[in-house]
Image 1: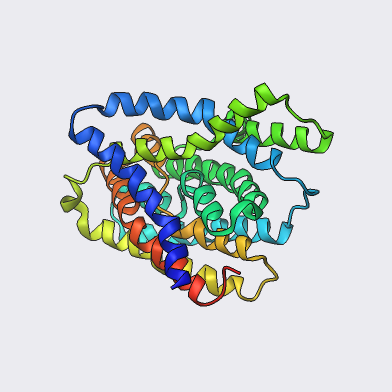
Image 2: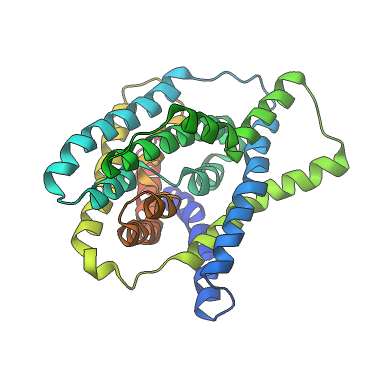
Length: 313
């Protein structure tokens, strides 16, 4: 019963937030243009505060577990290398190949990692969550540019990748948090309070936006591909990662985050990137929509299963 409660408490808020966005779209209170503008606003103004808050609120000394970070990055790199060999053998067109590779490896960690981890572990998960986001999101972004450019027939510029990293609001917030933490600085109360409030509302608002932008009307055209990608991404790969983590000296939050880098739905940013870099935009959007919707069920099962097995304590 405890495992069911933990799983429900972790997943139901996602359903509520995404449902609010979906209802708003259905009732005509918001449209895609508004959601796009809000999404840009949240990403550029609130997510930096969210990352800053994760580090700023850590009271103990920060010691990064490089085995944990290295395992996360290595697993993604190995997966992408395997996908670059396998996907072209089973998918005929380059626009679809790049989209499928990106959909399988690239996860919506920013939206899902922090609220899930906090719901399951509380503040003890802050460091594990912040470090994995800080390292894995740039890795995702670098690989996305490489993969899509490769299947478009171009080449990714190292300068472009570096500029993209330095301009990423998540990385900027993370660095600011590290500076404040190691310098021992504390914000004045009147400033600290609104900053932490912005951090706290960033994820719920982002999930409302995600719910408002999900469209399922065209999934039938690519149903077989969508179901195959979803099964590989959200069932098979997390299971493989979970087995690997059982042989590593990791804390429960670290083990959970490593499973989540594959079990969470496809990153919503993969859709606009695919559309702007020669990929199959409609397929990318369908994969984001379907994995996001089905994640309410699959994430519940992963939290419940790991809790029942005693892997969350």
